[in-house]
Length: 155
Image (tube, rainbow, N blue to C red; front, side, top):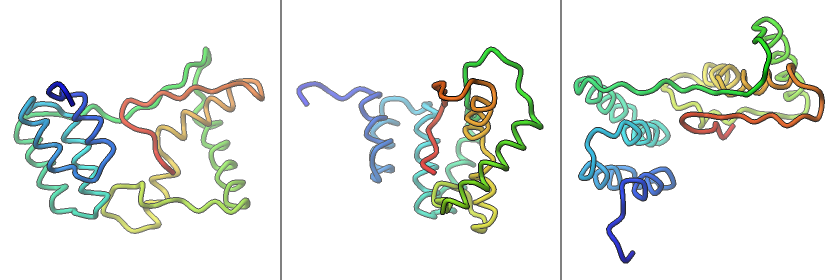
């Protein structure tokens, strides 16, 4: 590069690679308080099953008084959410997906828990609720736009 990389350049690199600690260190030299770095680094540790490092990093963040913005998903529909109807549609969706051969990618559930619990975490996260809500709230064939504040689940 002809110029010094900016914080955003380092963030893009951090999101795209497994050299998380080195890249995070570069970003911390620019901005020690960027919560996104801690989240991505924690996810990298969890993906590598480095649970002690994940816990150590989270304790460090807590001790600094920093807080992560909770994961959220949005869908833009001019309608009121129907929790029971969403749950019924979600259950139906999972059954149909499993009949078609769907097997959850449990590596996406970055928690130190058993695989069965990881499957449940993947089934019932905000992105899936938003998709199902969009599906039951719009006419068939309509585009559903899902917006996430952190990342899209690869599962």
